[in-house]
Length: 382
Ligand code: 13P
Ligand code: SF4
Image (tube, rainbow, N blue to C red; front, side, top):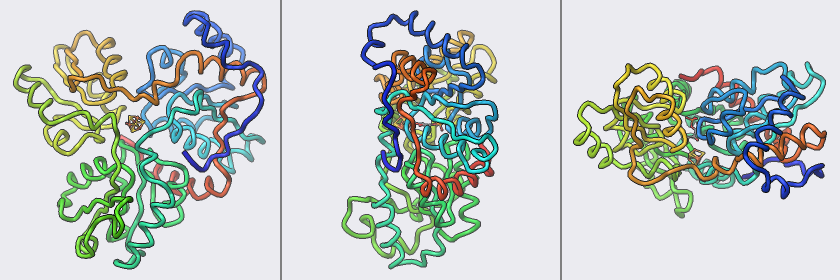
């Protein structure tokens, strides 16, 4: 986790005491802050959050929708982001873009209730590694023909890199439009950090696997590729992945197809290609929810995404038969770090005028990252 000026303000209420409170007490106290602050406080919740956190959030969404909500909101004067670090960084950049700050006359704090809520995939591409990759590529191919595209699951520094080099950010809701956009502007794309989202999206667009070398940032030269492979490339994929989604395997799909006739397989595009190829529906967390909401009673699903979301869908849709695609538990342990004690601690300190865990992207990084993020918002999500 880089590029942020995380403010270390002294807190009115230390965290320790919150660990001893019951869930009911915590809920009541969070609700009291919500009543006191009204629309000035916006609590955003990603779909992978625990149920008790989702219940207390004002708005929920996938990465695309949460970015758009942070960009649009006029009334709020503080955001508590129940999600992971890169999401809070994105919200800070969008909610505090210069024209917004000028309009309202102040910055608004974006708070991540637990600083340890990171994303292991985002940490798989660091700015120095990406700069090094760019430099090496420029010795082999015409770098002015390469458009960088970063998945939103990345640090603000990587988004700024894309902004500086004519690239964009994408989410799992608009990766296809982003790749099309990039390939209409350049001959090749450098896509990071998720190789699976990049590969699945490019394959769907008809780009062959041979035109997608994988760049290993730890390899000594050319990311472990031959010069010829780079010259023939259309999309250069970064060797990164999501540790949660890599659990789903093609044999899990085979198991459900064999044992549950008529079942539909619904997966997130961070899953490996062999799983995505066997699925009926592939999409962002928002798309996954819509697919279930729109299905008739009696529909059978095996869903390949984070456990909390699948369990919530199961509870909300007893009229359908919903299974978790993997036989093992697979949850996002960093999303899970946001719990009621952290949320209550963050909310009460905010109300007391001593916000804790404020994510503040430095101005230079924010300026360049905003260029790429605005392109992403123009590309829309689905
Ligand atoms: P969405 O963009 O679908 O919300 O996914 C975010 C994420 O981190 C998935 O692992
Ligand atoms: Fe990152 Fe994977 Fe967790 Fe999403 S599910 S936040 S990609 S580690």
